[in-house]
Length: 47
Image 1 (cartoon, rainbow, N blue to C red):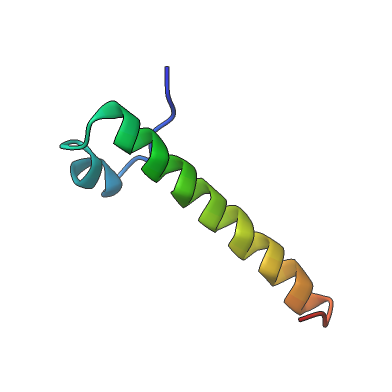
Image 2: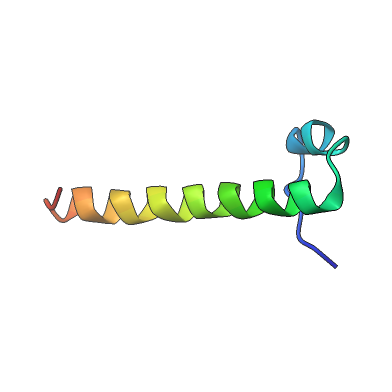
């Protein structure tokens, strides 16, 4: 079973085929991870 975002994201992804949904969800997850890493760097004074 694949993971899917909830809430308001669901209607945006419902029309996509499963493989495109998987790519989109992976991209969204990586974007969140990258943002979290950037927050840590900024808090530590690194750019």
